[in-house]
Image (tube, rainbow, N blue to C red; front, side):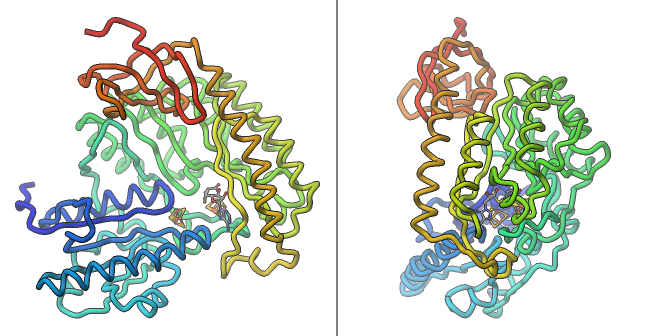
Length: 446
Ligand code: SAH
Ligand code: SF4
Ligand code: F3S
């Protein structure tokens, strides 16, 4: 398909999870045929899209302060005889569309995550009449069908959304309300997209879903992974985020058998106290989670585990929190994301009595992070002296340096020539820091 020369500038700011990163890329894809090219400078943009996150209060409040800045840019452009269209997308758009329009009248368009395929037509409409607002009606099938499988990847790794929405209703979480019910894309569509990516030089895909391992296509996630592993050029497969309740035997087995499936698993547990887990509606206990990790490591002994944690859920006592520390000590995480519980309007936990004081949350988070940081540093340090296959992704910070990833998702910095970008090369790890590794090419590479 031939495309017009770019005549308009598009600026997209992305917050939140990788699914928003994927969606932002797809929005750029549907706008390209209309002549929109990306810019890094919002003040130059004809169209600004804020792709927002509603998961915690801070994330949501950020949207309103950013809109304040962008409004100033819009006014400056208007004073210079130019225009700017402002669109708010993502989970805040879905959850608080009306409030956004009300609080920031400079916003032209509000669009929920299931409606991005309608972006071109809605933009055209706002150019005629201001104030269009589209609250998506959760039609993910239409979204993915109309976004199509043709991609324009910008590097050697790519995200690929295969599942969207969530039916789990953890009592703290807004996702089931902002993204709707669980929906899995048909396997053929996913494979077509993966082939398109591989054909353009992508070596690693990360399959995405709020509950990616609940993937409902034929054969489940394990079946999909096995098919993807056969695609020429696609050498690394990852997936995120998983729910412990959906980690089935077939998937665990695939970890032991499929070489392309990388030994790094993000498997959030949230807490270590069964009382808290029950109140969170998590559908697993500390014990069942630990047994699951054991099984996964039996299939893939070098599996690096990552997790998400919430401290200060309503009713969490000191001894409950200590159970979280205990669980962390037993698992040994290679990486983690930890959060203070944030009360989200409309979720069941927001109305629970016994909310935990802010200072207590702060203190627990600091203790948890100290342990998690220590584990991450120890995990990285344990790689020193090993030789690991590294996929080089981009130029590094220093001249003559490339930056890539180990199988365990660690960033690795190496002195290496540019032509190795996109290649998987053995690297001898020489030193480790908390966030990254440094090494040297293990072979003479021509
Ligand atoms: N689907 C994934 C993660 C979704 S959101 C899962 O089931 O684990 C990403 C993380 O944000 C969650 O794992 C949780 O740790 C955190 N989170 C979600 N809601 C939160 C809230 N109200 N307060 C603090 N952290 C929250
Ligand atoms: Fe939120 Fe729970 Fe669904 Fe994850 S599984 S998206 S935490 S409701
Ligand atoms: Fe945030 Fe929505 Fe993702 S709330 S974490 S952007 S699904």
